[in-house]
Image (cartoon, rainbow, N blue to C red; front, side, top):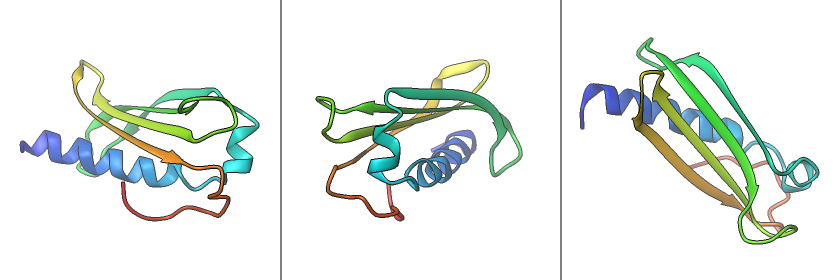
Length: 97
């Protein structure tokens, strides 16, 4: 894995952690929702961060959380992570990808 890929993956993992801190009940009132913003990776590179919250299969079910982190000039070389939050999981989430 290249240094750039490792840096983007570290940024994506950090962003996914932040994206999954809200409870299902808090998120479900605002779906679908997404945002793109500029930020800095752990190694200091400029990057674009996308965060999306969508219904995974049907409204009221699992929430699909998508995070994409990429160099502004190279979307295809970015890192994309996906996680789901089930309705029964109405506690603050912490932990892995």
